[in-house]
Image (cartoon, rainbow, N blue to C red; front, side, top):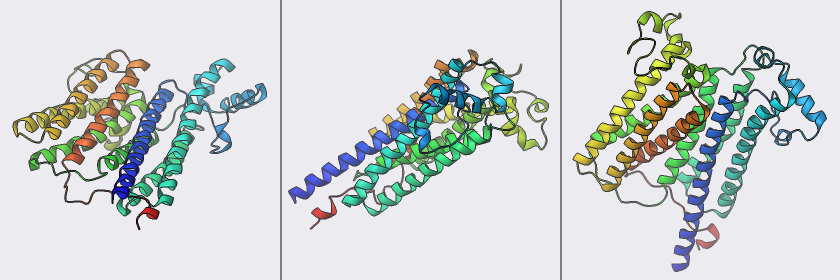
Length: 361
C-alpha cells in the first residue's frame, strides 16, 4: 500500500506540473499573439507550412523570397509600400515566434499526454477531458490559418470575427486546462449559498463576453478612437442614431467601432459591479475562507483590469499598456474559472490520477 501511495503522489505531481506548464505556455501564446496584432505583424507570413515553416529564412535569398511574397498582399501595397527588408524582418519575427510557440505548445502537450496514456495513470474522466483539450488545440492551428487567410486578398488586416474566434478558442483551451487542474484529486466540499454559485457563474460568463468584445475592439482598432472616459463620442451614452446606423441593425454589434467600444465599456461596468457584489456577499455570508479569498482576488483583478483599460484607452493603446491590459485579462479569467469551480457541485466525481497500470497489481 505504501508503494502505491508513493506512485499516486508522484503521478499527481507530474500531471499537475505538466498542466501548469501548458497553461503558462498558452498564456504566453496569447500575449505574443497580442503583440503580433499590435505591431501589425500577423500577415507577414503568407503561407501555412506546419512542418517546414518551423524554420525561418536562413539565407539572403530566402529572406528576399519571403519579402516578395509579402509584397503580393494588400497590406503591403496599401499600408507598407516602400518597407525595407530590415523592417520586414521585424514584423516577420513576431509572427514566426507566434507560430513557433504554437508548435512548441503542441509538442509540450502531446508528448507528455501520450506518455501518461502509455503508463496508464489517467482516470477515465480525466482522459476524456484531456483528449478534448488536445482536439481543441489541433483545431486552433487550423483556425489560426483561417484567420490569417482572411487578410491575404481583399483586406489590409484580418477579419475581426476570425480574430475573435481565434482568441476565444485559445482562452477556452486555457480555461479548460485551469478547470482540469482544479478538479484533480479529492477536496472537501466548500459551503456556500446558491446566490454565490450563481454570481460566480455569471462572472465567468461575463468575463468571456468581455474578452470576446475586447477581441472585436482589437480587430477593428476601435481603441484608437473615442479616447475619452467616462464619456464616449461626446456623451456617457451615445445617440441611437450613431450606435445603430448600419443595416441590418445587428451588424453594428460587431462592425460599428463606436458600438463595439461602447459594448466593451458597458460589459466592463457590469463585470466590475458584479465582482464587487460577489466579494461583499462572500464576506457577509461567512463563506469558506477559500471562497472569500477567491472572491477578493477576482474583484481585485477586475478593478486592476478596469484601471488598465481606461489608461490604455486614454493613451491611444500604447503597446506596453495594451499588453498589460491583456495579461491582467488572462489573470481575471483564471480567477473567474477557479472561483466557479470552487463553487461547482462537488458531488461530481473528481478527475483521478492513479498509479501506473503496471503497479496496480
